[in-house]
Length: 285
Image 1: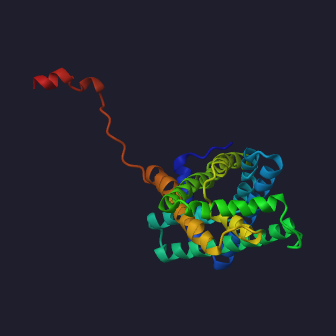
Image 2 (image 1 turned 90 degrees about the vertical axis):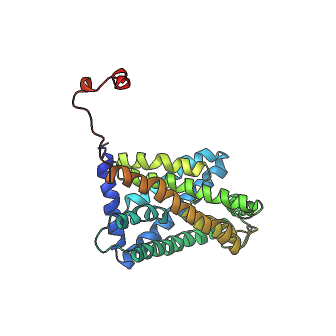
Image 3 (image 1 turned 60 degrees about the vertical axis):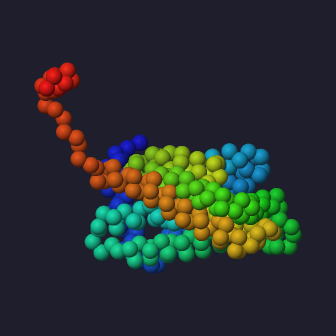
């Protein structure tokens, strides 16, 4: 599988973050748009499979196909740039500033949202024959997902908000592990296997992914979900974005950077262990 060891892929993470910062606005938007669209199609596929088989695990097993494809094609998700781009700033790469980091995040957010929204509209058209009939079974399921994951959290107040935030943290811990997984191998099969495993975990566990939600919630609003745009923003998207940022950057980006890119000095070893004084000798002294 052509495994790449941790210090090597840690360096790749920093280089990737730097390259994304200096990418043109056009290319950043195109890559983000395509990533949002492909991930949205993958989410629609997973929901369809889960509805038709009655087995959510089957949908979760198949969902990573979209994630793997978009990263193999070199497209960018907000969750990924949350983890990689700040590393170039922390590593003090020339010309990298906080403003450029925020610029990249903003452009990727806009591109992801536009791509996911386009697919949401297309799926709503398919589920309703261009809004001429009631939503089919898959469309009804998309509507209920939006309700349970907005007003469902709001019903619990602060505890619901904390739960939502933690689900966002755990989501990008797994998703960003998948992003890094693509750097752990130089072969396509190795990259896919390394990406597939953590993405399966996040989707089946019902963690909150900001880009997936850019598809699920607009779809739900179009398909009769009983929640509002304000519910979506306050009780899902904004806390999810913050949770994704904390989870990916803290548990993946900074953790790998600290221990593999900026490894602490190795502790000194005694040249002759036998020369070390025994504990009894120390006590006598």
